[in-house]
Length: 483
Image (tube, rainbow, N blue to C red; front, top):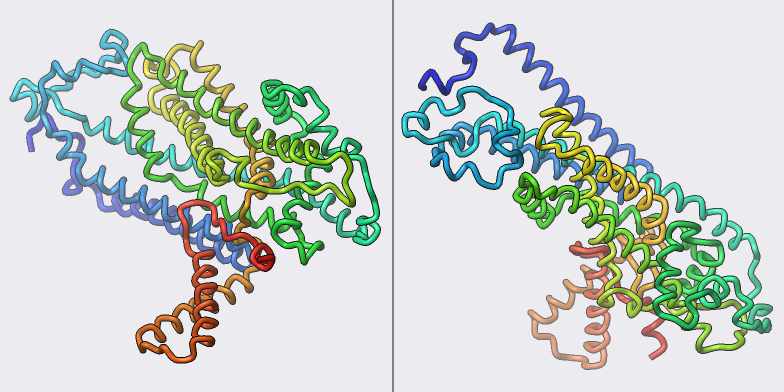
């Protein structure tokens, strides 16, 4: 190696006690973290928290991916730093102007200097990029966990509503004889008789502002709960909707905590656009904020639409007010789009905060890459608002409103029932395959029955098959029974 490219000394002339001490510390920290994750997983399994356990497994996958990225950066850093390019092409699209950049002394030494060129990416710059990727992943996982922790705590406050309903000893015969004017129901008063009654625009404005206060009221919870039970489990009016909602949220959490491939694309694009004078990160900070407000408004508007459907069709109703869940109320008739948007919002917000702290620690608050103070403070304020609003309002709204689709989620089944149904479905599918292979055409009646049972088995198997979006399933069996 040329002397200009070598920094410090190699292991050949490094004291063995230094090498051993450093390795001991690194290995001890790594093993300690691995054991912590292991025992956390055992605790979650012991407590029956399978969705959270799966989320922990997702975190391990992300750590493994980061470890692989780290390995690639470490192995190829010398190769990359020896790629030489003309100095002129390195003067475009800089995050800092050359006049503001710190004086780093002689930078074109070694192989590239002999060619009158400069390195494509220095070893130090690769090291800083390496640190940023780790910081981003840690901040993202932490923010997602905090959002679900505080959002889940707010959702658990609704448990006393569920308990009150369970203790009410509801008498269906009395309810059937009870006729009530629609506009006397609290749910209708809150969502239909307000300013949005005669104007679509005002209705959307009402939904926009409602997400900031009292996002879900007792009348909302009671009515949406009854609508879900009536649609999906009418034969079980004592169904614990709150418990199901918590399980469904935990099941979705494992999808939010990961960093998907398209999010890594956003990272690359944002790093590309960090050009001096563009203030890219200031403008990008508004993207998750606007999306979060749009999601919250849409979720509130779904509740209003459910109220409007009842109020516009009926003057008086017999029994309790029942809304009709439907995918028609959601964007592109797909409730799970909301989860993708929340995933992106949390990641983008984590990216903003991670980038700020990385620059602060790595280069200092006064670094030119940090930007002007007038652009920094609004970014931080927006980040805090996003985190609080998503935990306080948007996530609880998501947890209950997305249950108002045409389909229910697999969390509606208890764990032991899920396992039993999956085993039954697989056996039915296997029997169908064996019959098809044997060419068994005898007994048309029994063959049709077995074929029908096998098709049901295949449908149930598809319910619990791993999907790229929240585990939505087919409509409740009661819907088919009416045919």
